[in-house]
Length: 303
Length: 203
Image (cartoon, rainbow over all chains, first blue to last red; front, side):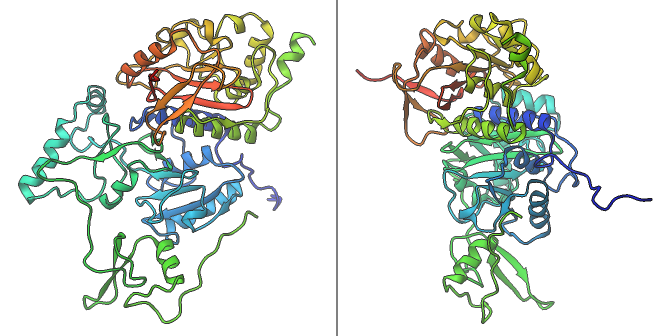
């Protein structure tokens, strides 16, 4: 075989072909016009398996331009497999600048967290969504759930939350906590911890949701009312932590438990790695912080 | 210039990046109703189709999206062949079949409820109206509120449809069904998605 080493496949900008982008772009516009409604779209095969964020990748690929700065997080972290590989993917197929700093990004693709740093009005947050239908585990038939959304019939969801209270004494849903958008559609916020739900409410950033396997796109325009479902006598509450981050001593942030040894040793650290590093840079020290701060990743320019 | 030349010239110079720029402007305008998102001239369609409206059509339309043209745009054969050559979009038989409608003279357009409103199950199957207006300052002022608007926004688009405020109120009442409007001005785009409410100005 005499394949030329330069004879590599060349892709369109951002991998998707233009007709696919137009189709996804039209779905995004409809999603923005009908906040919380799941717009069906013809999801494509991507060079990564379903479950790895193909919905979010397709949304990002359809909106991204050469001047954008992309940040990708996986459970708040910039340095885990999913985040690293999607960031590398877009560097390769779109040659865009990437960053780990929340404030510098124009597009943030996320898997299951909203950054701790407040988002600003120019930013777009793209969520990777596994199951977009909040009613799916209560009613498996798509024909029925579609009818329920059409008729605004969400009693079943309240029954589910009530059963939580009857069984556990409180609403036991801690992630993918259902929200009502602009008083109309009940929406799955993707499996973000309910800690992040209040950040969706009237956020100045545009929020787009892509579910590749389930072929749905939905959106929250900026300054949209997003209310977590609850009851008068059991109001919605976010998780609280009884200790600060072990590395940066941050309070009122979402913490991950990290196991340290085989003897029950553990610590709680910020799930948002960028937030944690920024705080340590500023000199905040948790009780388990190392002596010298680690080298921090900086913005990498486009090649 | 003969019709064949007019049909072929005046498309995007750089289709991938021009389409992306136009789409981002429309997306930002749809996400922030009432704001003008500036757009340079990307397309040179035959008159009276405007450069901005033409660029939006090139960015969003293809063979999956039946197009409706208003009476003024239906006239010149060059417009149909230009849109056909560059987008491949078929022409819709009726306004209710259209995914996009291009309206050059909004002041004389048919009622908004003549276009596809989508269904209660699939409210996304509605017509998106692209209205050519000369500016956003010289018409009757509209006070806007709703998703995408922090408090209120005001625009005063010229040449809007007759009884627009009343028609738009009815469009709001059909939610989640209803049409969305993209206003194409020579400077850029602004949008009125179906969620935007027009507050009546107090005298």
